[in-house]
Length: 384
Image (cartoon, rainbow, N blue to C red; front, top):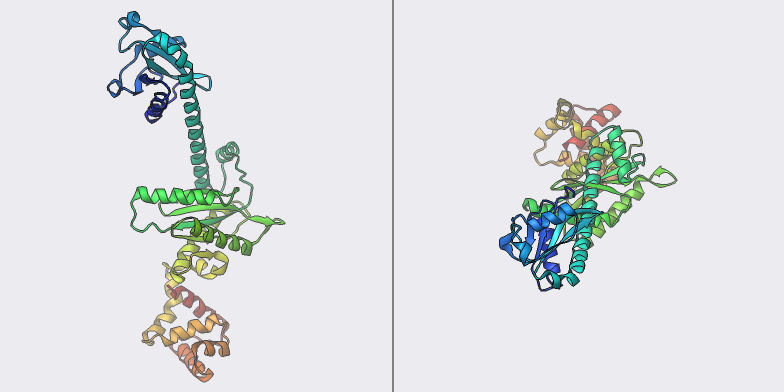
């Protein structure tokens, strides 16, 4: 016998399926002889002594009217051991005249064992999937891989030496309940599994998944533009295959040890910063907003307060926001006066006047590179 945990739901499925084969009551007993599935619901939970005999003697036990009175909780019929991987895991009982049931017993037992094998295989696949997810979560939380993690990965067929880059997938579940949100995540996970056979993925929370994608696509070089293109294609495919609202963010690639953790953190920050700056965009790449992502860690510190202090002075004297708009446009056009004036629909002389006022109000010399850089950083931190 074995300690195999016979699921009651599976037992009911076996009863339902096998009772379609023969017009007799079917009982399914676990490895302790307890009835866990039956066409006669009143018998659920009873100990079946005929099943105990079949389990202990590892044989088919036939019960007739005479032997019925010597055993507790039994009726005439056949009790056949159920085997999984050559181990007895339970018993299936057919109620009726044992002589008339002999021709059906083997067929019913074979059907039940096939259902057991299928359920066990699905259970192993689900367990393997969970273990892979746990491994991925460990990969994005640990700077180095322990010997246990490496052994774990080897058993799952995961190559920890393969360079990978992290992509965060954020699901907008709105006000959905936990069960509905989890269902949407699982649907999203199924769609993602169809797109990258070498990807590793895990559900991080009710609104987030992480996907670890092989980083080397061509000649062992990191190609961010190619990954960005594929991410955009993936988003389009997800939109076609599902009504789910998602955002994707690709992190930076770090080839050294601990690179997966750093890549994951850059992807997380990229999606956070990207949503703040471009709320209507759904795909973000670290390479496109590198500086704002790098500066994000300063946002709540004293350093950020010091950096943005010149802009605070500017805001005090910029009620309609003209100077701030001018400054951001100037930086966006690489401080080119002609392009900036054109973008603002103003004359160059007007632009020069505004820039002089900005310098006066901030106390920074825009002709000085260091002052100009400080103001640029302040402008990056100021964009929410």
